[in-house]
Length: 67
Image 1: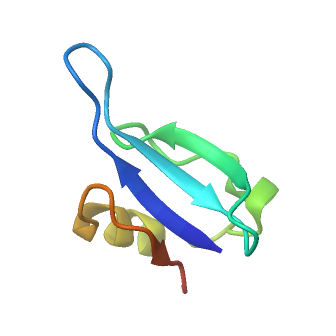
Image 2: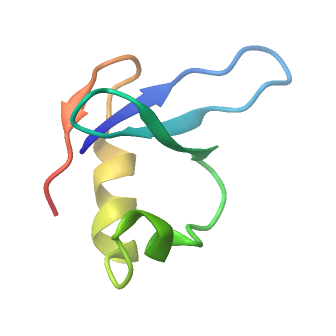
Image 3: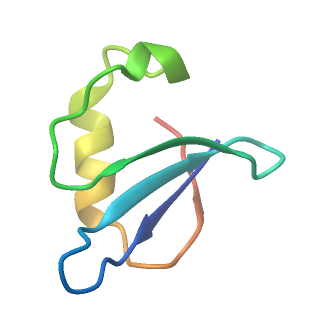
């Protein structure tokens, strides 16, 4: 799974994208909202780790997600 942070413009907020091994978009959510429904992506119970990864991400850099 891969993660990328997308910079918003003007009234559009920053977003986080989760992509699978084939780079297909599997999740898209606001960076400033609480993380929920993570069980859909196999990440339940890893909210704190994912929040730490998101806070350290640079905009526009696709990175492998390993929690």
